[in-house]
Amino acid sequence: MAIDKRTKKIERKLEDGVFDANTMDVLHKLMRQGHIDKLGGPIAVGKEANVYRAYLGEEKRAVKIYRIETSSFRKMMPYLEGDPRFDVRQAKYDIILVWAKKEFQNLKRAYKAGVPCPKPIAVHKNVLVMGFIGDEEPAPELKDYVPEDIQSVYKGVVDSLHTLYQTAGLVHGDMSEFNILLKDDKPVLIDFGQSMLKEHIRGEELLNRDCGVLAKFFNKHGVETSDLEIKKAITRA
Ligand SMILES: Nc1ncnc2c1ncn2[C@@H]1O[C@H](COP(=O)(O)OP(=O)(O)OP(=O)(O)O)[C@@H](O)[C@H]1O
Ligand SMILES: [Mg+2]
Image (tube, rainbow, N blue to C red; front, side, top):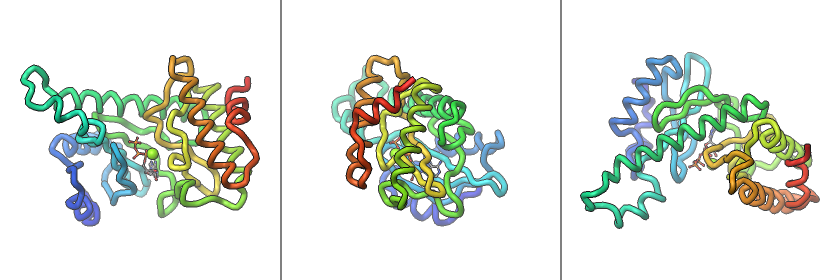
């Protein structure tokens, strides 16, 4: 497999080996299936997943690899390990697989509905392949780059969430300036792992949370709005 030197070097520094034997098998399978032919350097190292550049010929793609050793599991481990009744490693693996599948399904719904988001390409086990957002470099997160015309970014985000809600039937559930990328100063939504069907019992709670986070951010950057106004705009018929 073609993995560039930079990836290898950074990988060695990581506490949790992302490229364990299982994940290597998964990457090989995605290559055989023709979804990627080369893995590039890391874009981001997150709490639960790492995102890497990838390529299919000249086309750039992004690969999100969920780690099995994640922070939330680490807290549970001392209370589970050594108990012969449970195969904890298997249980963790199963949950990660469901999570990756869920993120992929959410992304498919969002993309199909016309929400600006990465194109869903493939998911296999703990690895998700999607379209790359950016040009040469990955698009910046809104937390690091606030375009001059913040009003139109605000409108773009709210319109996208309205489409996500009304056409895809989803609430994002993890909306913040960390999960909005700016491509040519236009917002692109990412990170749909926590998204839920809007009818879900926790749907409204998640929507309220998203609206609160967005109101705070956009208020801070001079947009006159409120969580209620955002909620109304997202849920309008
Ligand atoms: N398709 C993509 N193209 C370019 N960059 C991306 C893409 N997807 C993710 N990124 C970059 O990687 C970062 C992390 O991705 P993402 O938000 O999906 O995962 P996370 O927040 O680490 O994971 P988690 O789902 O565990 O919260 C993003 O903030 C963004 O900078
Ligand atoms: Mg994120």
